[in-house]
Length: 245
Image (tube, rainbow, N blue to C red; front, side):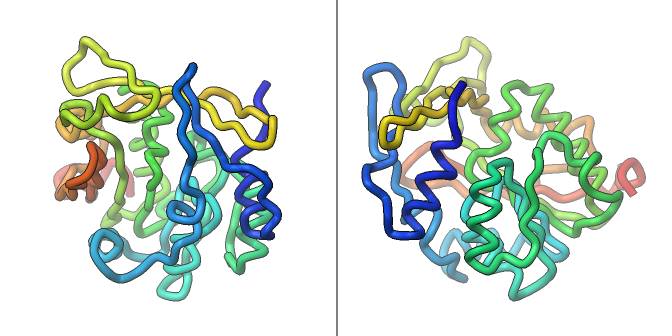
């Protein structure tokens, strides 16, 4: 069984005691994971971050909040709750000043939060891909609808398998089904190895398909020029808002 390598190295980085790089690997393929860039650079009201902010409102649920980078920014603007599976990262967020950091599972939202509790949700870091299947993605969106208001918004992200740059991703696995792929890798730090992570990558068209039976609809996309990465803005569908408050 893997250990919480990710939580450990982020805490070590924060306390300036990191001894080795955090390595992502899939078989013999290896690359260093950019900790400071991804988890500790400040959220800024510019470029892609501004696009995200424009699609969010409070109260906000930051899903898979990591070291609290985004939560620290948004909690100064409106009520923000950070949800994180790693107990080490929950402790780190509290050290860094996150006011409401909670240990919990993003795939069990209705058992952890009340109906209509949040005005928006941020699911950043390809966390949604950990649902592992289209059915899992649809179920997450249904659960998210249950804990958000009738006028709620959300921002999610993924890598687009239909983008020609997708095959460059470490751990990329093609799929015969159009618009879908898998990605798998593990983390290694200072001789400790994490569990192997499995991601279900989905194109924007597949995301729209997943929202079809939920109260959500995809309203806007923002694509990266450098990779297959994209962000998607979601809103509750006015015609079916009654399903979720």
